[in-house]
Image (cartoon, rainbow, N blue to C red):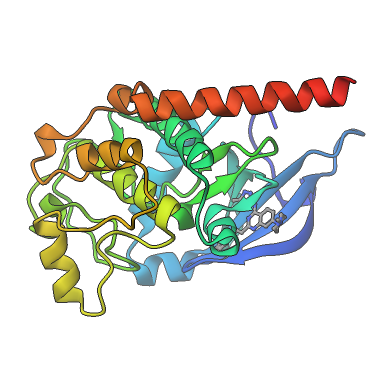
Length: 283
Ligand SMILES: Cc1cc(Nc2nc(/C=C/c3ccccc3)nc3cc(N4CCN(C)CC4)ccc23)n[nH]1
């Protein structure tokens, strides 16, 4: 997939993987050469982009995602268009969507949650170093790679920091931090709040500020008011409580997440489990 000017004829289109707001995503593979290389092709209708007024958002998504190269960020290899559609050639993540995994498992074990928290913090460090804030971290935008690693997918809402872009709210607001709920300008620390929400949702199976009425969700977010079920460990509570902080400047940093004692201890549990498994297989 080096170089440019690809077109649809260079790919064999497979099954649809999913349908988004502005188009569908298909499994595909390159025709050229003997090694069939799987990709995911996101097909967007120009007409819908224009009527949705999101062309420049797509430009930003392409600009940002094509320049980010990180093992926990889904690659955007290339893109092309014909008279009616735009095609994004994205990395294929064979593990599927994290939110489906979470729905199936109800909630993730602490070691699995900590691994995902480490990986997403590493990926966001890569983004923030390039002055990119994602702004839409949630299980629906996260995919699972071939080795069970997390991949941040959709960059449809990412922007260059700082930004006070009001976004037309579509989808859940469970992940919105207080400063975005109040319409203040926001910085990269919105992603720190979002991974706090994500950590809670991975451990509990639902987000911390979920309420029947939107106004109750807003109120709970603005005061960072939430409760833990008994089974959430002290270490996990400590991490989440350092991320779900109303004052953006007081939130834990990404380095702080990756070095948090609970994360470190859980990664050690993962390493030991992997070692035992490989020793068992070696026998
Ligand atoms: C961009 C991309 C997707 C992707 N991989 C996959 N995407 C989607 C669902 C995608 C989707 C797209 C738009 C809207 C909704 C869903 N579903 C997937 C389901 C997969 N399987 C195989 C693994 N099974 C456990 C579950 C079903 C595998 C990869 C998937 N790699 N790269």
